[in-house]
Length: 425
Image (cartoon, rainbow, N blue to C red; front, side, top):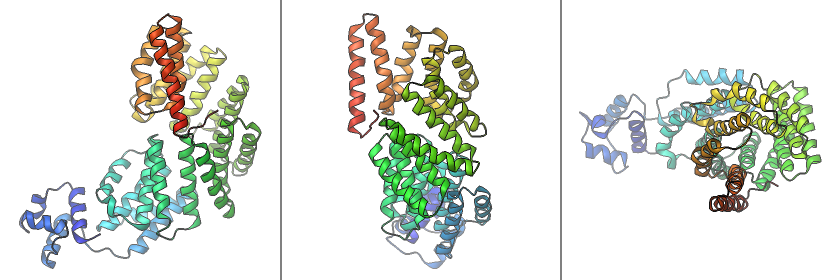
């Protein structure tokens, strides 16, 4: 990054116009030439610009600084949050005055926040500020910037963007030297995002590569994470025995490390196997155990389990239990855009449990709110489920034109799933 790019970066971060920055130092056209790399300013002008921006223009010990931030990420990777907190706050207490320091701090602060609190408030602003110079970030900084962007998209449930950012990060592996654990974590995140997109073959490939790295380093809890993804993939193709085997291996690790959060995920996926086998009572039992294991976890980690439990309550016609569950959780989702999809699912089931069947009000809600939301996000899995419900309703009420339209849309949704590599049998 040249001097002009550094000055432009901090000017934009500090929300200054060229006129505000140059006032009393140089002309606006001259500053524009500096920022565009057309001219090199004198040492005196450099010092005046740096003073107004409250920065220094030269980076000290960048390699050492990068390594210290990577140590923070390694502690997060190992799930040693106390060590990560100590290392991060030691860095956080030091002023970040140069561009490279500022970039590193914002990238790793974003990663730190997402991997410790799962809270993305403020993260988008940090990465947007770094994004001013996205095209000139190289090497390790580019790798971790793309990792942070991928994580942010993942937590915002924009899984396609997340997947693409992680693939871009993978390309950085050829240009710089990375340790096995860094490669393993990236491969795991690619597999995780591909799994959310139901790209089963891709998810399987990358997760197996990550698993091999984690096994070589004897990081068993990360191995368990991979086993869970593999179990989900085999569940989708109805290879129940293989899915169960991976979950049993993960369960052994979770028990050895007394990891309740991991047990919550395992119970959830054992519940999914029971769901696919049509074992409703067993599924309800396992989803309930999952929620109990996740009792100290964030709400975002509980929502998919609550959603699956609602579906099982519907199958068993357990309307009172369904309403009780919704009364506990539905209000906690209101106003949070990140949970809007689950909120719509929950409202749909609240109407089913309340009225016992689809009526004009519930159909109006589906047409006006639920369907448009998932259409806007191209979430074909949910659309393939909801379109036929509308088709059957309108067919039953002899509105054959509307019924035909929704049946056609359901066919289109299934076709789009296959076009995008989504395989869910």
